[in-house]
Image (cartoon, rainbow, N blue to C red):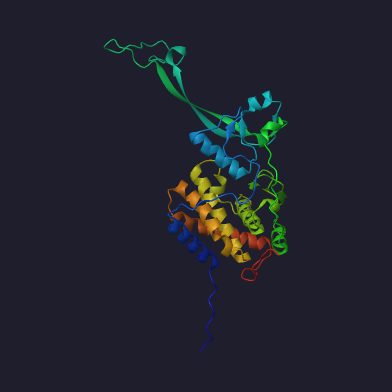
Length: 320
């Protein structure tokens, strides 16, 4: 009788199932919070300090988070020049919208389309002499602009948590082809320079959370056309659904990588909370997780191959 072959564990499926279980247990309301200390102020605001509201608040908050912007201030190209600043070459702005009300008599169009239309109703009463309009314009974060006054870059003291590098994990991530630049206020992958920005590890509550975040950004990095060519990565800045799908892929990929590297037990809820927040943008449909898991597995495989790592061989990594 042939000897029975031991079936290999499907770590990715186990992780996905457990994350879905945690999201369902919480009713989709697991709170996620940034795992590092930052100088960035959460509420996006205009150059004069007035906070954005509504859809613009959402758009700019997501953009700041995704691109690791440190400053809460946003302004147009013209406004940046008025402050003596200069938008850094190659930086892309973010489109926001403005809803307003105008008087038709002020060139607003009127009933004849030229501001001269009759504003009296059939019964002789006044009709509405105003109209609503919608405009869009492009703004840049202060982090994308050079030579602005210091007030646009608020600072905060005591950001060191005491977290220090873990040699085994440093060795693993150092083998990947995408360079990592530390010292940033946030974490993000930059396609234009093909590198990853990360806060210093000392800002993270625990060193494992630094590597979990780093894995997330490496998954983003392999989504470009010359690597895996993920469609949701290509459309990341085009619509919220594509962004949510790409974030699901990146965080699931991070969970798979962390599981292989021995980081899952302590931080599974971090992944579940992050995914739960993005599932809301996809109408809390957990099926998106399973669809994203296939892309996440391909990304994790790419990372392991690039690092020359044979899966199933790593002992859990822990800080000394």
